[in-house]
Length: 275
Image (cartoon, rainbow, N blue to C red):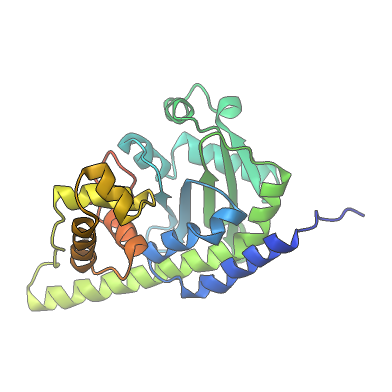
């Protein structure tokens, strides 16, 4: 009889905190922030591609969350169910009998343009896992891909994803349902009133520049040194950004800016909402 590798006590605490925080995740920006905390200690990654079965489209629709820049062509490709990388990831997962699997771009997909683009950026290994629809073992309910430059995902990483998958699945499903309901509600409200959807106040170029440094975890003082302005000026800019984006804190501001693609196409972004 085989046994699973034991988990160190400190890692057990990390997993518990991740699971305890999951029920609070209802929006896309909350999902991103959740995956940037203890989640990173449990399963390090810089890009997550999350797919959920859309009953209206009768297909799995993908979204991408990335904390480092990616070319727009790569972003669009990773969000496509038909792309060679997503299809290869599905094949690897199914060959592994629906357990967490590792896809190697150099080994499995090097001739393809998108895998070449990713390998040039330092990506190779992609951790993949998913769940099938209840009673339909050949149809996906959700599918997830995690990667980062120069990743070395081994058996421990696969076990980590195996253990966390139900939690990730439930959190992302909740996000999809919440966003769909909110979008439907807004659409009906504005259609009945004859008004267009409200547009958030655009951030200025200076505010965008500050947000990029906030994304990288710099303090107000560190940002002020980078930009040659006072820390108080940076603080004032940050407060204006929070008000404009309706964000409660810096992490939420970055997440919302990414959702709006307010950081620019050349910088990190979420995929456009598909709900």
